Length: 91
Image (cartoon, rainbow, N blue to C red; front, side, top):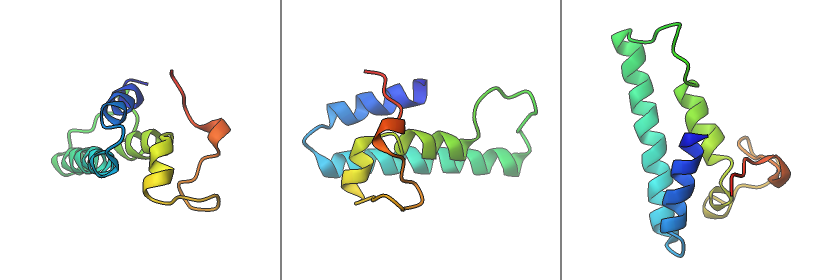
């Protein structure tokens, strides 16, 4: 929820700036992908970590953002498509 809320705030701040929104989403994905890789390479993943896997932190958050569908022309049937009624909403 915190990941979603943070990204939602960023996209709201960048409303009207599609390139900025796209850049923010890509930076989010790259950051978590890099951190996830470092955890596996360094062996610092522990079985008691309460956080979701990094790939889920990326995909679940981004796939819940309506902007994602607009910016990347995601359509029903695409791999990351989530029906609007099933997307996470906080506000």
